[in-house]
Length: 248
Image 1 (cartoon, rainbow, N blue to C red):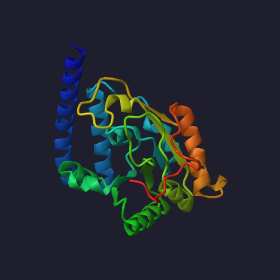
Image 2: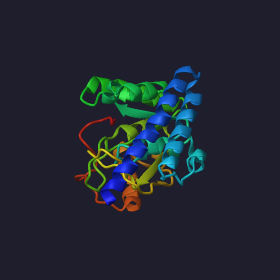
Image 3: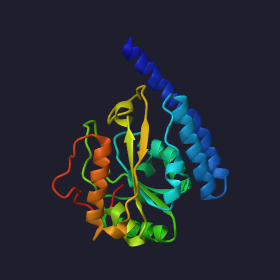
């Protein structure tokens, strides 16, 4: 019976997502201005999480006093992008892996929202995207990253990549750590159907990049506060970073 209920809930959740995303994609095609489109996406994300019984409790007002900023969040589920969109104010530019451009509806939505795409295996492309993001940050845009770059079923915080922290250092923007709870249980890696369960988002106090000598020190400080809040193992080797420069 539990498996039947789980399957029924999961099918309902995907149908709800389709019912919300398809009209959203049409609206994003016709609504002018990236700010308006991002606000539509934020409301759609909040609506989806509400109708599947996992409303976001944290208000964007926890982020607004520190805007513009660089947000970094843990990555544990396919739902993390929707969760972060629902939890943050509408003005954020997200860094997305380039593979998402091959997903028809998702690609359309992400492009119309002004997302940045990066080819993780292409050093030259990573460098160009990094420069573009720094330019956006210097001009007052807020940036959002999942610095682990990937996720799996195993609990724990994976090694961070330095791109988010380099951008924050160069643009002198505060780094706002955000910890997502419950997403791994709700839709873990390789799962086909979401499971019932709550989602929590905790916005931690900002870290000022001017207090740190370099991006690596800033990254380590952010990891430390996120690990305390997350309560999961630290999966990074000494130093805490992955051997590539910019995350997707």
